[in-house]
Length: 104
Image 1 (spheres, rainbow, N blue to C red):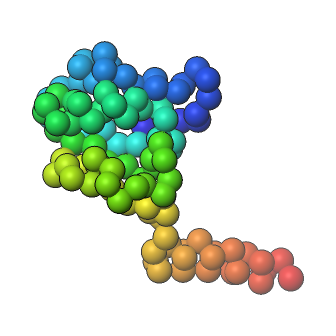
Image 2 (cartoon, rainbow, N blue to C red; image 1 turned 90 degrees about the horizontal axis):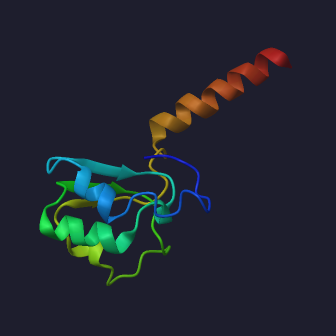
Image 3 (cartoon, one colour; image 1 turned 90 degrees about the vertical axis):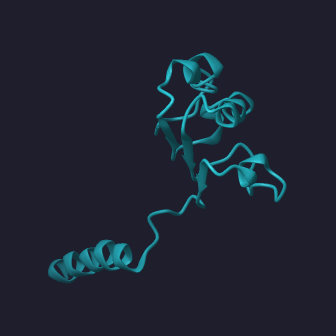
């Protein structure tokens, strides 16, 4: 999921929404942690209600060392900088430099 966090979208995914998902579902949040009710999500992951969770945003950042996500095999976590690779820098910044050079 990728959407803005606001009063109307906070915890837009709760226990009821998780229960409606297929057991094979993989939920991915790359936007804001509080879009998903973390307590409901942890419960769903532990009980196998959904297959897994991918995340690069958290309710609390930096994520505490003892956070339960860290102990779950069905959670893949990355820092909120997933786009940062050497290839992406070459593509994005190289293109900007080429465009700027043509304008100068």
